[in-house]
Length: 330
Length: 266
Image (tube, rainbow over all chains, first blue to last red; front, side, top):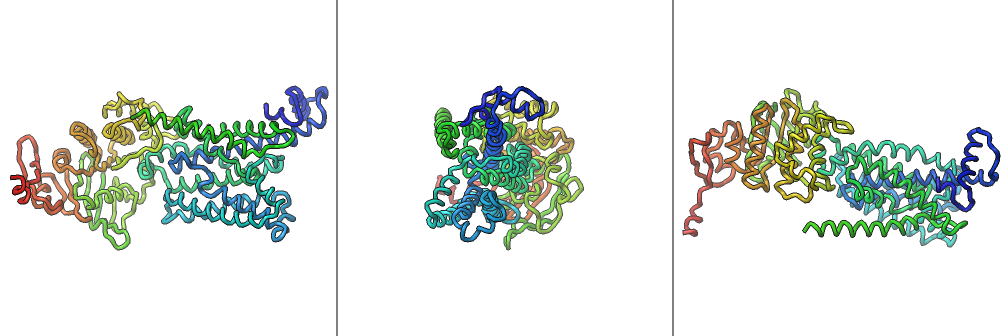
């Protein structure tokens, strides 16, 4: 609510109510300008919703991947989602006018987003195929494959960056830093199905992820098909995060830090952490975006910077708390 | 009940299990003994459906093991593995409740909560039910894992319990406790299979003993028949002496001193 009202164009709470009421068909006296209405409905509201959706997708993917890898340092970037999206986005920016102008002609504004999404899917698929042998995906191999593919994608991205013009460099930089500025009803509805699937399906794996903490064979003894679990989680995470990265670029730390906050504050039980991460991730990103677009209004701070500035100190704090806890045992 | 007929298992060209057959009836405790690398854990994995035999049949409750889905098996068959690590810090009672996972979808029911409480009392871990698992000693952790495993099949009339070296790292008291718990479950009608290192425990608590060597079954039957100097020598390559005592139905096995040991100690 707060986020919707505050911004470069000020809309007070009552004005908000009147606009909503007016739109909903309840006639009331007009106490707002048409500019406010336009901003609220076409820019502010979709942007806030996009922030919530992206935040939820990133955080829920982070929490499930941490459960799957049984490693608190896991986050969507590990399995190649971010590097693939990055590579294809940079490819689009740098090579577009030479090789891909026909794509932009047909897909228009969305070409970059679609390219990023496809890139995310391709690299994650490569990582997964490398790691799967005999129908089983060994976690260590998955991690190593992620490192390898990330490095490969990164090197090509580096190559393209080297070839880029100044203008393109600026575009690349801002894409990499992340921004919710591309929000509109169109972009929101385009990524909503992907994110919605991951948000709805992932919480169902909470119990299985709890069991997985005991070990893979132990989880199998309790009736959980671990291979299917791995596959589904990776697919869901890629869908949600790939779509988010496609629209908003790389927003870091949300997937990594949000689940930790919940684990520290409450419990490590995935039945709490997974849905909780979605909610907390949504709120945090919306608030971060609020700051990002008001602090230097009317200019916008790329949100990736903000999440890093806030996320890193919180992460350091978590490390210190854990160290003290462990130190206390001896 | 479990029936295993002529199973083979190889990885590449290496034969890990060769022509092994045995059966376990409800109410029986089978102890599997053998040297390290004899194939005991591999055999257990085959029984758990973790890996599949290359030849031969395994029947669980008269149906081939292939016809069972993992979650159906989990409702009446519980396994205590050799190594149990926990990557998230759970509390003890949460961990024991996880044993009931195959039985409820999202929230534990009244019966589950009651079973967890009873099992914690039976295994003597109620006093640290609220502690973090990772703060417990090795023996206490082992008992918590056993409680989880027992909770999984507590309400099954003829459940299956597989134990892989359950006495590892426990002191004498707890070694006995765990085996009497397993014995008690067998007496209640369960099929219990336990891999054991201590031959004396095996002979005292089990109804049948099977000795494995290099993936082959070299003996299977009543403890008194199976535990002989020759069999032990063949399986473990050591000389032993048997001591008879009226208290025990089966002779005790004591490794005898080798000739070189005798001369150096004197």
